[in-house]
Amino acid sequence: MNLRKTILNIFLLFWCSWGSAQVVFIKKGKIEFERKTNTHRLYFSGEADNWTEQFKKLVPQFRTEYFDLIFDENKSLYQPGREVDVQKTGFFENPALSNVVFKDFLKHAAVSQKQVFETQFLVSDSLKRFTWKLEPETRMIAGFECRKAVTKICDSVVVVAFYSEEVVLSSGPESFSGLPGMILGIAIPRLYTTWFATKIETITAADEKLITPPAKGKKSNLSEMTNTIDQAIKSWGEKYHDRAIWFVRL
Figure 1 (tube, rainbow, N blue to C red):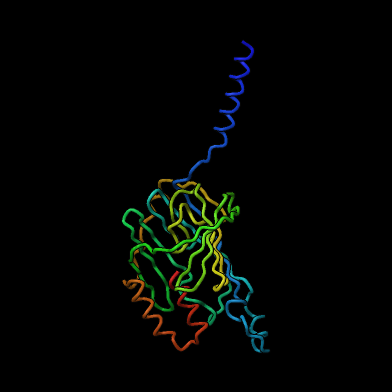
Figure 2: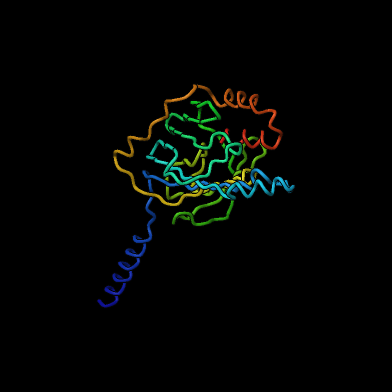
């Protein structure tokens, strides 16, 4: 009898431990992303004359902004979040820094609102397809264990992502998606810019109603918008021209 009782106690202990270790999968929520850019590396990399060194003193080394990504089982909306004091540098402003990106995974469609200099574009297209290479490396982001994946944009620009399978929807900041879970971290070394989740919250029914596509802007598709911008900035010089295009195509 004592043996049967001991076995039962061991079984109950195992069951309780196993149950408490179960992963809770998140299907709806709101993620805050911190986007940080090393402006000195972005604008002055490789330049070391006296004028450049003096100008660098007028420009903060890092620019930090926040974005929110609201999502449910099938849709997500990425948009500017809480405001912080950001010193405007005038000439040193890349296009498409405050994108709004809506993704519908049932329809495989996306709608993006991008402010490019004086023009606001409304870009409707299918979801972008990325060729991801999964890596063994992991890291913790906003309390979630994330796995590493790597892809490229514009043929040669490397993008490093970290995604969590605990957050079910295959979405992420900007236009990024296509991994087996939510992307909680992005790093693009050639743009000296990172996007990392700072927190994940539950959402209310009112929040969920906000997951709708933007509606304002000059209607276009990605190819048309890129060609228009390419013609407008082709005299900027190769380095600045290419980086502007990369930002626009995020």
